[in-house]
Length: 500
Ligand SMILES: [Zn+2]
Image 1: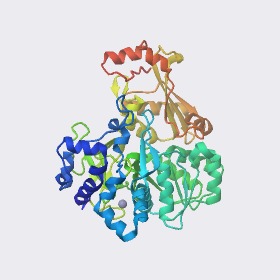
Image 2 (image 1 turned 90 degrees about the vertical axis):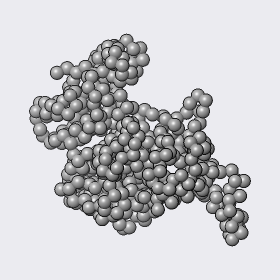
Image 3 (image 1 turned 30 degrees about the vertical axis):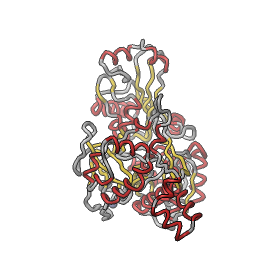
Image 4 (image 1 turned 60 degrees about the horizontal axis):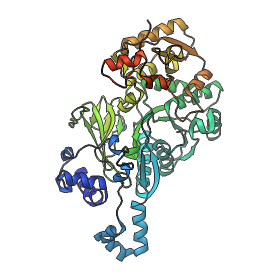
């Protein structure tokens, strides 16, 4: 079924109207009929984010990926002529406008990379709403639910998918815009008013929201689901959020994670699971997209159950469309086609922990003190650390001198009354055992100070890693850190020297 749908999509939509893929297929001698099974997808070269970035010759490369038929081409389609005869010319023109004219622009997210514009037509908005409806369905929502969308208000997928998810599924939804728009206090006011069954947002912000709710003695017994997106969700964080939910009177809350990205124009969700077991992964929509797992180095497609990089191909996208899109996200579990042990759905699932490779690169954090450090792993280690509520990793220069060595400071808000020295030692050991680096020092803060450090209510996305190193020091190339890393042949990476 997927192969037939792919063939039809390539033949009727992509090849006639996508400048990028028309040229790619032509130069590789491919036609839609070359794709008789999903395995044939490997004939098609990958598309990466770098293929969409502007170059000096082509400042607007992203436009080549927009499915943009000429009106005269559409008029010649046999289907167009039939529909015009049946329903009249005006109706057909409206339908074609809905299908192909961009109506909404979203931007890709990422800390350092340039945001890319992605166009959605009405056809895409309908699919976005359908994908959102399925997220609600998989998470176990019910029509009588009330939902707070606490994603930051921005032209990003998470906010808009959630908005449409709510209206399409048919719950009562209100969007706070996150911490920056209304502040934590404003969000809590709406929690008091709406008494939501579902809160959906970015993990760090939802943590602060619930923490403050608990501090203020707010009751929210209705709360049944906390749905998270935009950051990875560790087991430790799930525990902390369930504990906080209990403090506001909600005794049985599902903490569920979603995985989505702008280029897909959709997101996938976990289904509810018993809290003493593991989530079963992200439930895919095989009628809307093909997900492959490939070897991140060789690009070879891998069998089900193998860890690797997530590659995405839509089956019904208009507007901006990318085929065999390399997400840069790796899962350590791979794909499974077995029925879900928790909900019984038979759709494929992405299992395991997803690491956003792109973010490691962007943060230049992969090489610390000469050892390769997996930032995703570091994040899990700190999220799962006992007695730690919120944390932030800060990179500085010693004495704020651009020519000095780099320093790592771990800021911590304790979740209980554990002794500072004991926890400090524990955290340094924990970081060292897993990553072979340790922070120069651990600093403890109360929850208000932590909110200020993470920028809750100030920045768009709360910050778990901040880089306060002076920019000019890096550019001069005179710092010992820079010359060390150059000597190792690893340009652009920073050498950290940490004291014992
Ligand atoms: Zn399931």
